[in-house]
Each structure stands twice: as structure tokens, then as C-alpha cells.
Length: 286
Length: 314
Image (cartoon, rainbow over all chains, first blue to last red; front, side, top):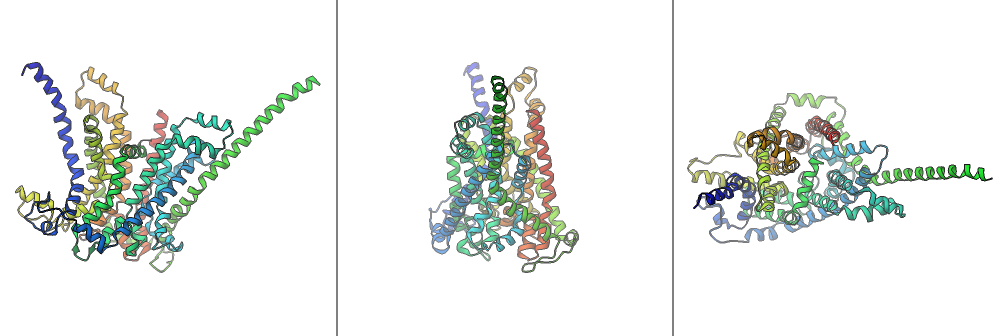
């Protein structure tokens, strides 16, 4: 090899050692637990509970027993359906309320706009663990305990602040002038918002809806506290509390439940990665 | 007649314009309040009111099934002499500090690496972000399985590599249990740090680095004198956000240890849950969770100041 080509080779290979090799442990750290979740869910009990077997892969055949156990012995698909109903309903409610609230905050000047903006920001930061005790009382008063309605009503309390904050940022990026033109032509505020602003802010609305759906699908504490009948539980709580009976753990079935429970979010994530990234950073950057 | 018209005309026109403008603004105000009303009522009834209720609970001896009566600061003074609560306080400080430090250091490292990744950019970013998206209650289950006493994959690996010769009791041991919950919190929270800091890195003007390089500054000097100072505002925001969400963490601890062994991993959220819901002492449970509030306020205060400062610079 000539000196010149060796120098070129060294320049080309440098990123491999300074970027790609160092990033590898991070990728493994992030992915291994999820890989292990799937591997465990497909492994037979005989291999799973053999202390001498190599735990990293499946050497004695793939089995769907754990998935079958979920379907026959537990109300697993009810949990899945419950999570879907609650997530879709609270996402729709939250996105509608947030679009309505974000529009005046981003566009109009009115008394109290600054303080309402700050109030939204504070509620955005209030963690569920601060409010679950009094909310239990409120849910009881409303007569909603042990119903999916309790979750559909309560989830928007943390979704609306987040979505409003996110949408305010998006709405501000749409030029005011196109709306002013529409209003000179006789559009009302509502029409101008629906037909002029929203089509221009579609990415923001998709982003808000994705996050609202993800946050409600992943929610655990409120669902654990407000809903106790086994067949009304959501995915996260059902897998955790119904598959652990006393000291007997069905690890294969637990991991199968965790895999299917994560799947809708992962699929959405694969298709809308860029929206997730922009939503994640906008909360902190904007 | 002509002069009359000349005088009158502009005045009438101006007042008509003014009236229309006023009507326009007034209508806008009504529109604003009408649009905000639904969100406002939702947050008033289901956030503000419960918060007031929580303060009332904390000042009362409310239990499950009884409304309770006012007992002043009794719950707080009782908590401050309770050894479990003091342990919870200590756990919370250890958990939050360790997790935030680890996430900050590892997060800056990962962001710097991701910034220089060219090939498989989307794939690598997507992979490291995944732990943040997957339901925590479910991913915590796999961590539990990975640290299970008999079949732990971690112990299996360490034994195969002859680093240890007997099983390490990860979750039954108080200190190792704390280490484990911190590890899981770092696993879940690291993507948020990395991706947000990456966005911060991308906002730093390239010219600064070129200028520094032509002045002979090495990579370390460039990091200390350009990257870190310009990243500080984003870093501050990320750390503040994460402080709230780490301190108020419930899912990871509840799934992995339920606060045990011997209350050594209880945080405010899990202890408040154990006292208020499982123990039925709503008053004391509410008092525990209210310890989160001063920290929340401090974060909001600092954050709003940072936002103002950023607005000034714009």
C-alpha cells in the first residue's frame, strides 16, 4: 500500500473508532432489554428455567405457548382493547381541547393570556404522583371509579398541557399574514383556524396526537389506582398485576404480554420517528 | 355645504373604522375566552381543585371512608420524626442525584457521538431513543426478569466470565436494589437527554468551531470553550425537567421493588401510595406527596427565568 492510500484509508477508518465503536455500547444498552423481552417470550419453559442453558438466544425451538396462555387464561385481549379505547378517546379529546386553547395563546392578545400560558406550563410539569390521592376522591364523587370513563376523563389532565404547549410552538411558526388575508375575505376566527391554520400546522397536530396516544397507552399509576376489576384493566396494569400471583411468576407470559403491550407504540414509533424526535425536543427547547 | 361635507366625511370615516376595529378586538377577546374555556375548566376541576384538596388532606387526619378534621401541621411533624419517611427523603436525594449525574454525563457523551454519526443515522438515533417510548411499567418487568435471583442473565454472564462465583442478590439487597432502580431510570431517561442535547448541539453555529480550529484550539479546548458554554441553557432545561420526573418516579420502583427491601428504595410517590392507598391514611399520604411541590415550584421559577432570558437574547 502506498503512503498516500494508507493515509486515505486511515482517514476513512477514523470515524469507525471515534464514533461507531463508542456508540455501540449505548445501542446495546438501549436494545438488549427489549431483545431479551422478545427472546424470553418465545422460549420454552424447559429452557427458560434451566440454569445451564445460555440465556441469550433460543436453542431448543421457538414456542408460542406463552402467547397462547395469555389468550386463554387471562383477559389479555380485553386489556388490549381497554388500552386502545382509553388511549384513542383521551387523545381525541386532548387534541381538540389543545388546538382550541393553543390558538388564542399563540395568536390573540387578551387579558390573562400570559398567566394562562404560565398555568399551562405549571400543570404540564405537575407529576401524576402529586395528584393521584385527591383524584381518587374526585373520581369517586363523579361516580366514575372502576370504569374506563375515569381514565378517559383524567388522562387529558396531563395530555392537554403537553399538547397545548407543543401546538403553541407550531402555530407560531405559521405566518400570521395568510390568516389575515383569509379574514379580510370574510373568514371568521373559527373558519380561519380550521381551514387556514390547521392545514398548515398538520405536522404539529400529528405530533401532538402521537404523543398523547403514547403517553396514555403507557400510563400506569392512574390506571392502577382508579380501575380494579381484572377485565377492565389497561394493558400496563393488567400484565403487571394479573400475571404475578403470589410467588409464582409466569416469566414467559409476562414477557409475551410486555412484548405485545409495547408493540403498538413501537410500530407507531418506527413510522413516525421524526415526529417523536421533534416533539421530544420541542418540550425543552421551545 | 361643501365645507360641511369636507369636515364631516373624514371624521365619520375614522369613527367607523375605529368602531369596527374595536368590535373586531372585542370579538377576538370573546373568541379567545371561548376557545380556552374547555381546557380551562378541565384543568381547574381536575388539576387545581385536586391540588387544593391535597393540601386540605395533608392538614387533616383523613382516612379511607372518613372526611377527617383539621389537625394543622400534625402530619408533617409526624413525618419528620418517622424513620421510614426520613429514609424515603434520603432515598429520593440519592436516587435523583445519582440518576441525574449519570444521565447528564452519559447523555452529553451520547449526544456528541450521535452528532458525528453519518451512516445509519436514523437507525442509530431510533435505536437509542426506543427505551423512552416503550411503556415503562412493561420494560421495568424485563429488568426485573434480568435481575431475578435464580435465573438472572446478569449473574449468568458474570459467572460465565468468572468475575463472580456465586449469585449476586440484586433486588433483595438494599444497596444493590437502589443501584438497580437507578440503572433502570438511567436506561429509560438517557434518550431524552441525548436527543435534546443533540438538538442543542445542532443549534451551535459551525463558524465558531472553524474559527477556534484556525486559532489552534484542540478538540478538548473546543468542547470546554465552545460546546459546553453554548449547551448550558439547553442542559439546564433538560436537567430541571428530568429532576421533576426522576424525583416523582413511581413506575420503576413500584414494579421492581415496591419500595423494599426494608423501605430502602421508597421514593415520595411509592411511599405516598403505600401510606395513602394501601394503608388508608390519606392525610399522611397527601403530606408525603406534597414534598414534591416546593421542588416543582423551584423548577418552574428557574425555567421561566431562563425562558425570559432566552427571549431577551432573541
